[in-house]
Image (cartoon, rainbow, N blue to C red; front, side, top):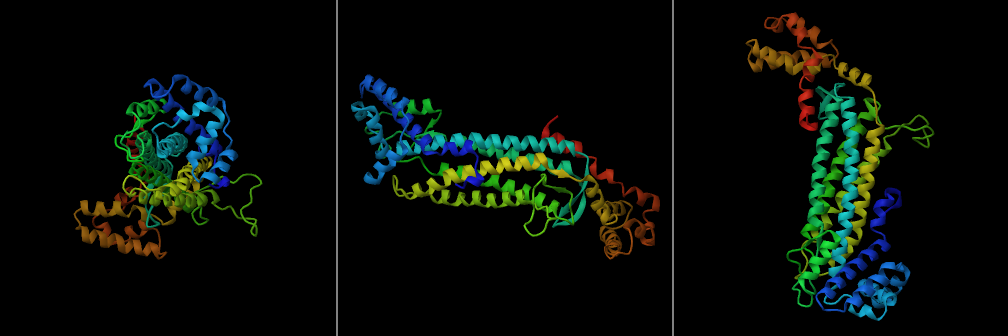
Length: 434
C-alpha cells in the first residue's frame, strides 16, 4: 500500500489495530457460544469480554512475541492471555488459526466492499448529473479514432453510467460471496468444536456460514472478489482513456480541471496535462494485476497449504485501497470536468459533412439505386472531401449520378444534425428510467 494512493477510511480497515480487534471479537464471540454450550465457564467468557473488550492491543508486543514463536495467531493469543489472565486458557477451544484468519479476512473484505460501493455511488451521481447537463450537446462519435457519426456528450456519459451500474452490481455480488464465516476446526470437520459456535460467530459478525470448509474458506470466493474489482478498475480506465483523448490539443473537447497555482510541467509553463486520468490508467493496471494471483490461490493442497497467505497479505489491502482511491479520484474528475461544446461543434464541422455519409447512402438505396452503386457514389465524393476538394454536400449536388436520384433539396435535408439525436430521450429512459 502506498500512502499517496490511499484514503484513511479504507486503510483503517487493514491496520494492525483493526485486524487484532476483529481477531478478538471472533475469539470472544466463539467463547460466548462455547459457554452457552457448557464447554467453558460462562464467567470465563464474560472475563474475556470484560478485559479484552476494554484493551488496546499492543502491536509492538504482538510483533515481538511473533518473532519468537514464528506464528501470528499464537502471538496474538499469548498477548491476549497477558490481558485477560488465567481465563484466557478457554479462548480458541477447538479452533484452528485459519478459523480466525479467514473469518477476519471476510470481515475486512466485506467492510472494504461497502466503501467501494460508496465510491461507485459517488461516481454514478457525478456521471448522471453531467450526462443530463450535456444530454443534447452534439459531439462526434468516433470508431477506430476516426470521425464516424454524431452523438451527444450526454449519451457518452450515459454509457459510462450504465457500465458502472453493472460494476456496482458485481461488487454487491462479490461482497455477498465473500462475507462468510468458517469456525470448523483443523480440517473443517467440527471434530473439536460444535457447528453452533460457527453459526453464533457468523450471526454476530454479519456473515453467512461457509457450507463446507476444509481448514480454510474455499479460495474461489476470493478469486471472484478480486476479479470483480479488476473489472471495475477496467471501467475506470475506459473512462479515463476517453477523457485523455478528449483533452488532446488537437481535440480539446473536454479536459481535467486545472486549479489556480497548478503546474503541468517543470520545463514548459504552458502545459495542462491529463495527469489525473493518466494516474487512473496506471492504478487500474495494478488492481487488475491482483486478480491473477487470487485465481492462482484457488488450487491449494488438500485441506490447506499456506501458499495463499503471503499473496493475500498483499492483495487484500492493496487492491481495495487502490480501487477505493481510484473510484473517488474518478468521481472528482467527472465532477469538475471542463467541457467545451463549441469545440465539439467545430470538430463535428471539421470534416465538412462526411459524418452524414450513411444517411445519404440509405437515401440513394431508397430512391432505387443499388447498394453497391450507392456506396460507390457516396464514397467517390467523400474521398474528394477528404482530399480537400470541398464540402460533401456541394460535391454531391454537382454529381449528376447522385442528383439523378436525389435532387439538391432532398440532399440538403439529409445533412440535418438533429436527425442523429432523435433517439436520445429513448436512450436516457433506458439508462436512467422514466
